[in-house]
Image (cartoon, rainbow, N blue to C red; front, side, top):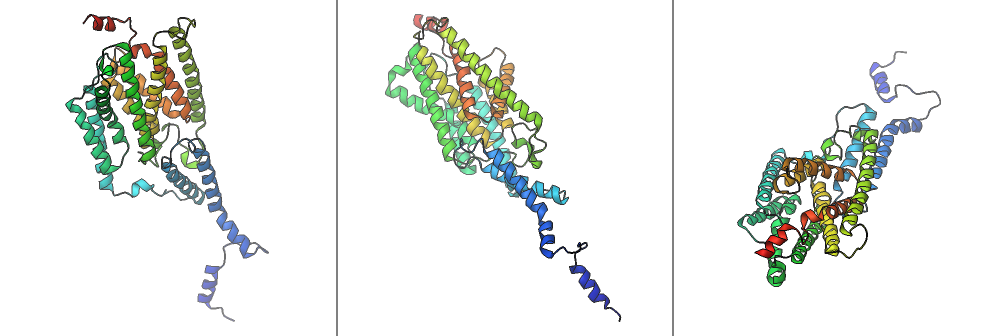
Length: 378
């Protein structure tokens, strides 16, 4: 008998390359699916681990980037298991290239405009009352930019002009707030920080972030150390550095509170010293307001590297905390980066409030300071 060659080839196409004697078809099908199943399970485990810390702390909608990260992790794990080298692009890469580039260019321009605005803005920690200037109109540009792009960072840029408008209304309703005296300055500064905190919380809860760098290392807290993100394993060095940062924030925060308390209570002798209550209230409200604004909102809408850069430049152009503004900017940017590394929001609030309490006499000068003596003479 002569076999039909075409029939033999057809049978070869449907017969597995190697099938052990006694092995049924179900066993072989299950074996062929084991790679994809294992990769999917591994990615799900990693996704669950990454969302445990932030799931209960952030408002609804502010962890959408983790959903995309889960997709990227699962895709990367499957590619490694099957031997394929190409990774499926992230969701943001599917946006038309021209539109994405235009938004990025506009965002850079608006960020530069914000720096210019901050460089021209007057310090709020002075005996003078709040006032409106023509450059506060730039807030309208930031609001329009948000309406066109829905990027919450533009609303962060608009907080200061909005605060100035509200403060003018408060000073009109309560003229005592305009007085050049110590207590009225506390009233103004606490009101200012409260307006910032309320505005930042509204942005946090009512908008959806558009993080920069999703699917790349720049979206991560420590870009240079997360080289194994697609394999679902954090760098051992990164984990230890995170623990060190957490420990330093706790230790230095406690130390700052104790040193400030020793100074404000004259060696722990009395809590009821001059303006001590106002100093504590201002420190807590201002520290929490800054953290919600720049870490909870701005960092989630960009990434840790971007928020540290923006906060550092912000202190260079507007800060008065050190004699050398460049040193002040580097110190501030480094501090912001460390705050962005820790996943514990409460720790950020505590440490920033502790720092404000520690430097409170540099913000609102004590009544015996020459600045108040000068005002009293005038």
